[in-house]
Length: 88
Image 1 (cartoon, helix red, strand yellow):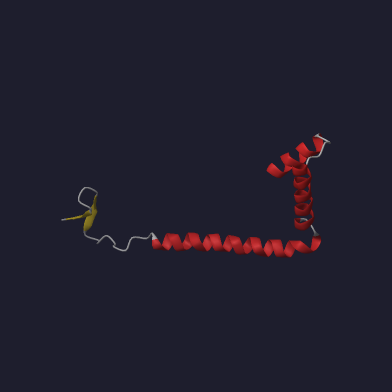
Image 2 (cartoon, rainbow, N blue to C red):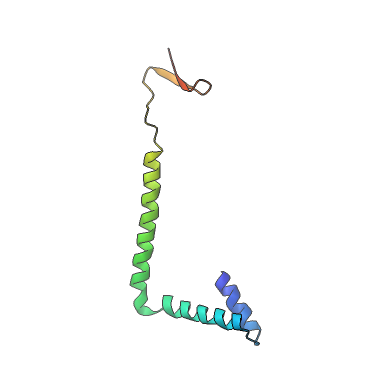
């Protein structure tokens, strides 16, 4: 979204400063680099690898967050005041 707004702003004004030329160069390089035909398998593979890393980190965090002490079957509920099971 930001790149589209920057490209639109560059096309509106014709007087190109050094920063505008640099931004136009970066946008052109990004467009040619990411949208080229032979690049898609690498982009797809790296995206899948990053997604797998994020999912793995989420699963690891969920596994670590599981409480280690389970409620015995004969206990009713957890007492938040004294931090122990109410077992009668």
